[in-house]
Image (cartoon, rainbow, N blue to C red):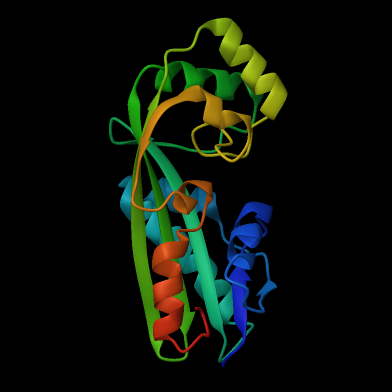
Length: 192
């Protein structure tokens, strides 16, 4: 089996991939996400492009390996909600999302010796109504400054939601394992 590389510095994606019990390494991709955000306004296209850029960037340094890139984009009303970067931007995004549905798109690109496999998982999330105090307490407790949509679903952020509809709950954390496991089996990896 060729080497397996996760093109990510995300501890959440690493922990998810560990569940498949395959040996792998992690390499942080050097990708200009801001440039992609400026060039692409379609949320699904943006997620796909960033996942592929990450996988290809790392694959260039690991010839012959199977390289997994992934990216998430939160979107509401067709607009991308990028990583907020500050407490104030978190509060703004959460005020916009509270009481409403939005989409979380998780794209995966797998660069392998035979080419590229790619897919996008779509989750529909309905945030419960939140008052200003709940938003303030949540942002202070979870500090989701680097999270699309301003929440950490794998942490306290789960308490912000009334409903989540998706085919694979692991996609919400950052790596859709159901489809990924199927793709890795197709590529010859020993996934049960």
